[in-house]
Amino acid sequence: MKHKTKEIIHDLIIIGAGPAGLSASIYASRYGIKHKIIGAVLGGQISETHKIDNYPGMEDMNGYEFGQRWGNHAKKYGVEIISQIVQKIKKENNIFILTLANENILQAKTILLATGTKKRKLNISGEKEFLGKGVSYCATCDGFFYKNKIVGVIGGSDSAATTVLYLADLAQKVYLIYRKSELHAEPFWVESIKKNKKIEVLYNTNVLEILGQEKLEKVKLDKNYNNSNELNLDGLFIEAGSDPAVEYFSELGIELDEGGYIKIQKNGATNISGVFSAGDITDGSDKFRQVITAASEGAIAVRGIYNFLKKNKS
Ligand SMILES: Cc1cc2nc3c(=O)[nH]c(=O)nc-3n(C[C@H](O)[C@H](O)[C@H](O)COP(=O)(O)OP(=O)(O)OC[C@H]3O[C@@H](n4cnc5c(N)ncnc54)[C@H](O)[C@@H]3O)c2cc1C
Image (cartoon, rainbow, N blue to C red; front, side):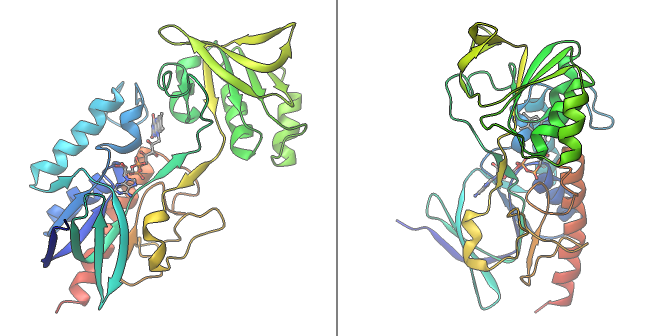
């Protein structure tokens, strides 16, 4: 049965409880904007990592604890965080109508889309089990933990190429494992990889399985390398691309860039009046998708929302 809460029209509903959504909520509370957060995972992607060590003033933080702290800070101002998935959004008479997975319906004058991205998974054995225990989707975040170690990177695009070069500055040896016969990265990156003695590219190779006990120890390949189909690694970075979480608002007609990310203006506004966006899901950070950039965009968007609500007061 649908639980309609149609009579309440919120000033703002924030979708996403990661750094962008939670930072937006703190600012919204302080601006006096009545709002709610709908977010499937409190803390967002940071909750997945064992350590965050590049957020100023927060040294050596456990990712889960970091996410909980952000949640508690937002809740201190009284916001309700609904642990749900938004399945659909439509706009009727300048009001946004959100349908949640539990079939509840919420209404708002403005919405902030802060649902981040989902790293494309390989869906191979061990990938989920060793996430944060050797498997990572973010080299700028976790690369530091592999100083002088042996790591692998899966992929062949620009993001895989920049990841492998970044890791080569830290690690003892980096294997770039790619399923095709040539890399599909910018020629500059390809040349830099060729010149770097720490990097070895395994072409036409797929990782079939990630193996280990408490943490990742090796990967199983679909062909032999040095007479073995197993490669010993301390870390494995998966760079198979990422997909912005955009399916649930497809009805709204929001303008996306060529990668599927939401195009935003300087104040976080999208092309649809009343829809704002922040964090990894936008094109706002020059593809530098980090906690600090997501949080900043969340704060900026709230000022845009505040001005919008003031201008459109009924
Ligand atoms: C393993 C790992 C380690 C990382 N380490 C670092 C690091 O050390 N330093 C750093 O700066 N960055 C790090 N990052 C990157 C950082 O986590 C992201 O840049 C940041 O979390 C982006 O914040 P966001 O709020 O835009 O999105 P996210 O953190 O992705 O949050 C999105 C939120 O939206 C919710 N959501 C998604 N779809 C829906 C829906 N339909 N309905 C309701 N809710 C929805 C999610 O559950 C989540 O709450 C790391 C990322 C990973 C994966």
